[in-house]
Image 1 (tube, chains in turn cyan, red):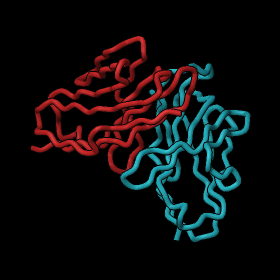
Image 2: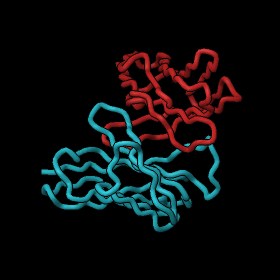
Image 3: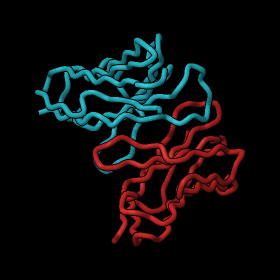
Length: 119
Length: 112
């Protein structure tokens, strides 16, 4: 149980285009999902917290107009990197918490990430 | 805020030996701790978690120890196998929060 799927797993696109990444919880409902960014040989940095039916909460320094997050259902959150540039190239990973009742002390279950390369 | 540090960025052990990976955190209000394993090109995989009302928890071949006095967390892996080679991250959440703060990770290499 607790399977999180990300799509696509790898994308290469030209500078200036927008890229949408999907994160789905396959066998559970997730009120809360998270989006992370990871550079090579570094740790995960939280970008934003995605809440179903409400606006995402962005971490300090993350441009909300650059990284658009939509959490339209209890099983799907999307991250759109708008007008992507080479410096946006990174490994983007989502996670989800099982259940609708938000409690502290629950594990986040991660997808397998999306490697984004902007040429 | 919270900061999470790791004592060693790399650790190399012989197959069959036990390994210990350490983590330190700064915020005494942290009450949930979790270890993840990340293989190359994949997302983190949940290993084990522990809450602040416990000081030890065991899983299959893994044990997590929590010392709240010195704000230290460790992951012990017994009888390491080649499949244990990965980067291991500790992550911490403070009371009432969902957000996790990740440590920098330790790359564990298992030598045959």
